[in-house]
Structure formats: C-alpha cells, structure tokens
Image 1 (spheres, rainbow, N blue to C red):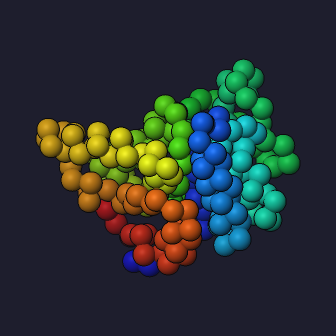
Image 2: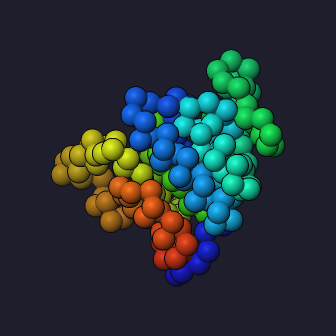
Length: 190
C-alpha cells in the first residue's frame, strides 16, 4: 500500500568514520528529510554522523526528535543543543521509543550500536512485529560485508530469504528521496 512516510529514524555512528563520503551522505540524508517535511528521529547526540545528520536537518528547517539514555548523556557524548532530546533509562527503551516514533528506518554507516539497532528492526520483521521499511545506505560499499553475512546465514539455514524483510539497499543517497516520497515500501500487514 502506498502511503506517506512522515518520520524516519536514522541509525548511524557517533563518530565520523574514516571516509569523508560517510559525513557527506549523513548531511544529504538530513537535508532530504527536512526538505520533504519528514521528521528525523535520531539518537540525540551532537557528534559524529549522528550530529551531522541532525545539523543538516535543523539547518534546512526540519523537525528533529532526539532520544538518548541517562548513561550516554552522563558519560559518553553531549546531547545535541537546539532541539528537544528525550532522555530514557536504557538502550532497550531508547530503541522502542525510536521504533514507535518512526514510519521507516535509514541505516547509515556506524559501529556495533548501529548494527544492533538495524538487526533489532530486522528481528521485529522476522517475527512479524514490524513491516516498516529499512533503507540500508551502502555508502562506499560500507554494508556489503553485512550482506555477505546475511547470505551466509541464509545458505546455512538460519535466516529466511532477504525478501522476507522490508529491507532496501541503497547505494546513492539521492535514490533515497524517491523511496521515501513514493511510499511504495509502506505495507499494512506483515
């Protein structure tokens, strides 16, 4: 069913990574969301790709919602200023809050936390708790190795075919705009 994606959770690194393409992609994602009046839901941080995507959305007049945890705020990274950041107790609550606030998910390059967030959404899809689209941004082929791992799990009989997920691999950020705006990836039931 075609519909309108109104909010997107963006999962990405709290560091910039080694390839400047990652930050350029994060900036473009923030711009795309803001210019198309799609709310950005993100981890609330002011650093790395997380801060870059939020800055770009804010600079382009977008609505931005940050969700962080008490531990992250007190120990690891500064909260993004200029927006309302909701602070929850732990990571599980943070993931649930971000899930509930979002119609779709964009996965930019990141580390183990980003991988955890993406696989959590995929697990929800596998057990029928979610049909929300996931857009894996394969910037500079960052997620290709994960694709190989998924193929290996399928080949060994531990994972259904990738078509069982509402997962879309996107190699160019500009292709994300059409996917978000046409709404064809939204489905009503799993």
